[in-house]
Image (cartoon, rainbow, N blue to C red; front, top):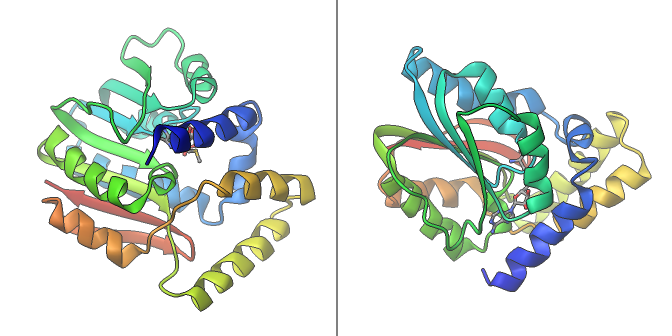
Length: 230
Ligand SMILES: C[S@@+](CC[C@H](N)C(=O)[O-])C[C@H]1O[C@@H](n2cnc3c(N)ncnc32)[C@H](O)[C@@H]1O
């Protein structure tokens, strides 16, 4: 992914940063499961042990906020290419010494090391496929042995016909959940930056990156949780 592409994506998200959180639940059928399933998995494995957690494409810190409620977190680092989105996260976690943030590009940044868990929600699908694949390998190297990666993600359908069905179902579902024409238009504007890949392909990349117990513990049409342990 070029710098220009990252800048275009983060620019669009910056535009919607103020209204982003309020839009989320109605726009995401399966919202509770999408965000909750992976954190439940991490919590069950950790059994209360303090965790160092990295959130990639953290935006306003929505997923991180849920992680804080579900896990015993000793350090939480949030990364996003949009400074305006991260401003929301800084407000959310103001005064919490465990939390740090950085404006950076997932494609090129140093992920560091020693993370017990790497989490990401609805962000990695903005990367081109070779960058997703390379990122999965970099995440595997950044985790401690036994560490878990959870990607709560928007995915592509397995064929063009199925993709048309995913879009049709999503529009019907979000309209039934009260999203009006303006909300739909804003979401479609952000979706210009989507580069979704199918679940099967991505599970293969995770396996190839060195993850074990690769799994998809939740999927509802275009929303899915992808996970693995190193
Ligand atoms: C749909 S939002 C998700 C935010 C948050 N994870 C959540 O679930 O609410 C996608 C985020 O990914 C960020 N993003 C997209 N491409 C990125 C890249 N190459 N590097 C860093 N962040 C990126 C955007 O700026 C945006 O904040």
